[in-house]
Image 1 (cartoon, rainbow, N blue to C red):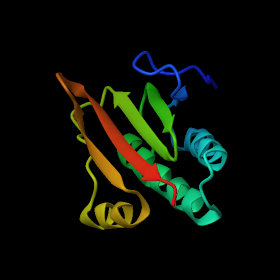
Image 2: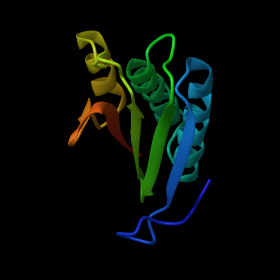
Image 3: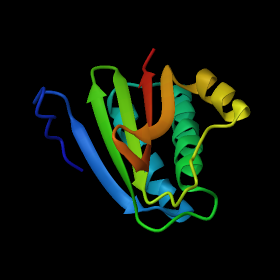
Image 4: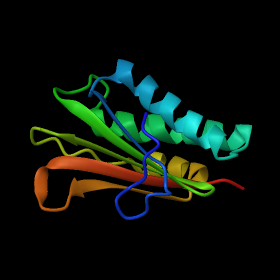
Length: 134
């Protein structure tokens, strides 16, 4: 883990994590998010919401069986808000998208969320979510 900030604001902690794009490694994505959220003062319920949201977004992005390559994650802690961006390339024509049910679940769990292709790269798909404490 890195506690160095982003180039835009060196005071904002940012963590980068790369894991194989397979379901068994999603646990590391959850542990990282929940550790940062706990550090930022999130309540136990908010940490649990975050854990569920990370699961939903990562599994939607990589699929139930996973895919070749890496799941790249960026966590950005800004005060009492945690932003997580995840990306995977080589989607091989399969476009990850949230089901209506998943979208409703995420609406209840986090303050903001989105999923889609990365700008200018049809072969890389990403998600972004934001959870605020309190």
